[in-house]
Image 1 (tube, helix red, strand yellow):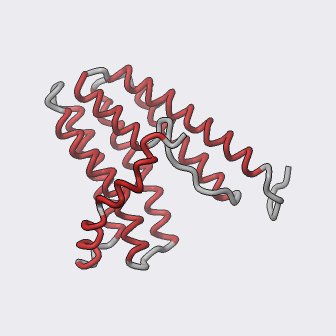
Image 2: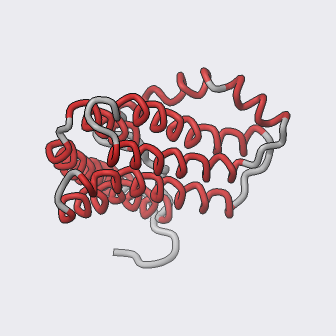
Length: 200
């Protein structure tokens, strides 16, 4: 159940020309990671301060850029042979920071407890995937409410003013996504022979 993540190969193909231009200019992948976080923060500012539905266009443009940078940073690192463990760390931290920055835009539109709940839930799928990868399983991505779907739901909120319902969907959907990934990992890891560490 990959959701919109299934479109990633198609999207990466559309960005191949951009990757080539960035590689020729020797742009650092870490710079793109930081740019993604800044775009998410800009989308949050537009969501918080611009009226409905005027906020929809800048939020959509900035979140599209955020997703593009999230795609480009790792791809550029692979294309140019600059993949490092530090870069992988910054990529993961950047993704979490961008998610939280984006959801902070709801602070002027919804109760704090709901924004905090959605922010916590939005991080759960990635933590589950990272735990699985640490245990030797493939890194899981995608939906039903992954990074791309969360961005789409924020755009819907910016266009409609339905801040509380969209936050509730993000919280519930992200929790469901974490559960789906956990179930998949338990099934996959159960078939692997144990190596080192805690064996249960």
